[in-house]
Image 1 (cartoon, protein in one colour):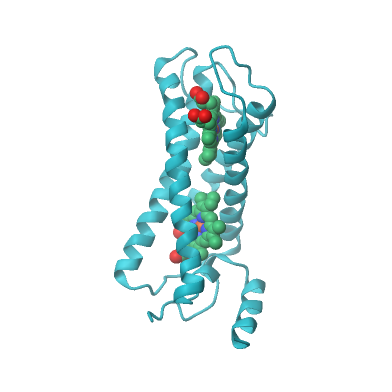
Image 2 (image 1 turned 90 degrees about the horizontal axis):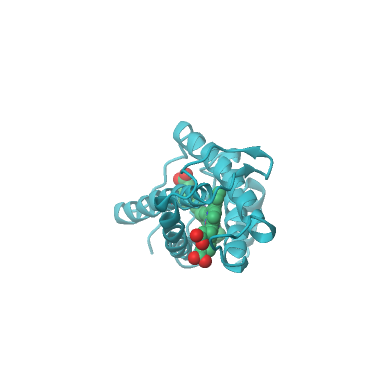
Amino acid sequence: MVKVNASPRPAYDAVARTLHWLTVLLIAIQFAIGWTMPGVHKDTQPVGLIAWHLAVGSTLVAVMVVRVVWRLTHRPAPDDLPPALRIVSRLTHFLLYAALILVPALGWINASSRGWTVRLLGVVPYPALSAPGSAFGHEMGDVHGILAWVLFALIGLHIGAALFHRFVLRDHVLQRMLPERVQSGRQHADRNY
Ligand code: HEM
Ligand code: HEM
């Protein structure tokens, strides 16, 4: 069996871990709303679930800005994965970041083209990213829905990989993103196998 990440210490600092799990929560809510809210048509008003989609989405945009800045200025501790696994892991993480930026940006562009103002938590207004009535903004709404499925597939792959590391390879990759407290408990449980 491949022996990787012998150290069970968190590789990501507390801020990076908090931002990761906050993103997970917001994305889960955003998918649930996106798939249950009424269809958006020409004269649809941004009320009810659609207003919630915009409010949660604007929060996600703010969280992603902080997360990207934090990631670029705070590197996680290196892993000791075999080279092939490291390439796949880095590529998946890069694609996840790309989708986490692109999907919200396209939703925001579409909202602007409908003349809707996107507001942080429904209060602080963001600038418009496209002109009201813009054909480009309209089309980006369709791309938003399609890329949301790509993001969903990437998340499935990512979660599958995390569980594969924990239960098949039995290394400490999952612990890299968990708080110290959970890890001590896990080490204790491991000793009792
Ligand atoms: C990663 C975050 C997001 C996910 C997973 C997501 C998901 C979705 C989904 C599944 C739909 C329904 C698509 C369909 O039925 O074809 C949708 C529609 C929509 N979303 Fe998002 N969304 C996200 C972020 C945002 C943000 C940040 C905004 C705006 C600030 C936004 C604005 C919209 C709008 C305006 C629509 C209607 C688009 C149309 O039908 O033309 N979304 N979203
Ligand atoms: C909405 C769902 C999720 C998204 C969008 C997401 C996104 C990401 C991203 C972008 C990274 C790279 C972090 C970086 O290097 O800056 C990452 C790392 C990680 N995620 Fe997730 N994640 C999600 C759910 C989960 C879940 C449910 C688990 C656990 C079962 C998990 C476990 C991990 C672990 C262990 C790492 C660190 C991997 C390593 O350092 O090699 N993630 N995640």
